[in-house]
Length: 600
Image (cartoon, rainbow, N blue to C red):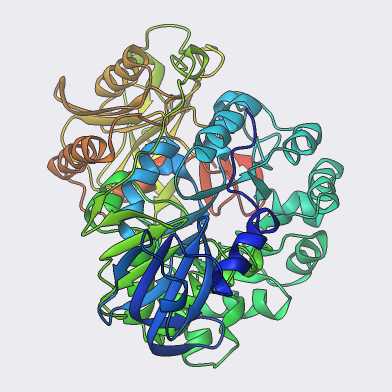
């Protein structure tokens, strides 16, 4: 694919100069608004913005001198003119949408720049999948920058992925036009221990002059954290408390703080700014993971900024955290993140900086959304057959594939159980006394079964264990081919026959999410691209996702955004306990542990 990225500043500088000097009329002028200046943290009323070639040529009290008869005039009518919002760390696949449909969903919410890590598709399709995401991203009318995934697998030796990413792959990708840096370095023990492969990926990124994304999912801020920072990651989004944000900023990292569909980490960390008074320029807002229902019904980065303000943050500071702070971090301060000459003309018009209604969105100088409606096309790639039909089970599964045998003669056992924590990525490593019936261990109370079904190489492998926290009752099962990060298939259920029905159904449709109860399918979200995404509109996917949420509730689940919790149960780089195709993993020690404790 050729480089179709936005024309560079030097290419259009002569034109911008002519407009700013009054020797050439602007293409567009936004008149009489309040300039939200994120460089000085000022609100400057009665200002105009002159735009030429998709970039800002002039910001000042009167652009009349560079307004010609053919200049398009947008009347701000005293509204605030603020920079388009940037999402500093996110995974498009988590929206269950392709880049085009994700862009279509978030543009009306004022997001004009995204920094995406497609490590979900990398685990399924390897470098080819990353390239497809990158190529479709470059087609969009807003700025979608791609971080080359760093960790597939995320924890070598503890999981098996469809493909592996190598340092050579990273080196190749660093030459692609839309690659902005290295995706989150999840193998933090590898970095801290000097793993040559991880360090080679970081080195390839640094030699290209690009940013290394971080992911330090541990509460330990001692020598391991120091070693990780010394290895080169420049940011981290895994903090969950004030001390985490402070530690990262003190060590020269950017604290990326997320509000996603299931991650509510802003309130606990923003006190580093609002109460401790630390410099907010090293504090960045992001979403990490947002599913389609959140995007359609609640918003995107506008939702995050509003939440930060509700947590006591000054609105101008919160806006900095979602604009100029992000641009600076990725070396793009001269390109985007502010309303200043030379930058891409990404502008939001809003009548209130606290409630933040997104009334007009301008991207690259054109109106892309107005009153919540998108006004531009978001082009699709023609996704190849190799990106579809990626669910390979090896054989039709039955209830027997989900049996967990007890030690001979046991009437009850002590099981290691994954404990779901509402609204957070970490889980708890729990133990439960479970009954044995006819030689098989059964769930009890809130403890039900979980299985990781291998789906990349048709091995027929099924890893079985136990999970608590969902509150399911009756005979039911839920299966998903979205299973961060290896993206096999996660099946959670109270009945082994229902688990088999759900797993086989996803093999039949080529991936997605389904829920069965008493032999009937309650909900189905088809995700035919890599078993992760749909190329249908976000509203359609969100409607099916809502049916899924309703079905989960009908089966007894009351957790907030429980689907996100389900999809992360195989993420073997976030403590405490996870499941993989190789077994049950204690992420505190990065070792496999038995599902059933030996009898004493």
